[in-house]
Image 1 (cartoon, rainbow, N blue to C red):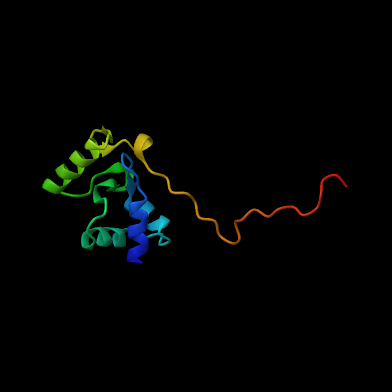
Image 2 (spheres, rainbow, N blue to C red):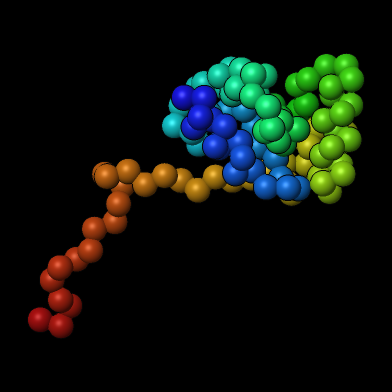
Length: 112
């Protein structure tokens, strides 16, 4: 679980942000936002500053919150008050295709 969450976190590019919930969903664990927090806490080398709360809110407190905002601003992320401007900077993960959601090709020809 932790490896899949870490892989999803690494996909968030510079200048973009994602939410704890979106990371959990992209990793295949919808509703596991707290596990994303745990993974960020115990793993080194992840771009932790690119992960924010729902609506772009920085959930960290104290000096860590200032550092997160500073790092995001250094990457060109803009804020609307105390929240990240999610319209401009939210990273959207590609939807996963499942066996049932794949588009089937029509095997009959239209020229008959």
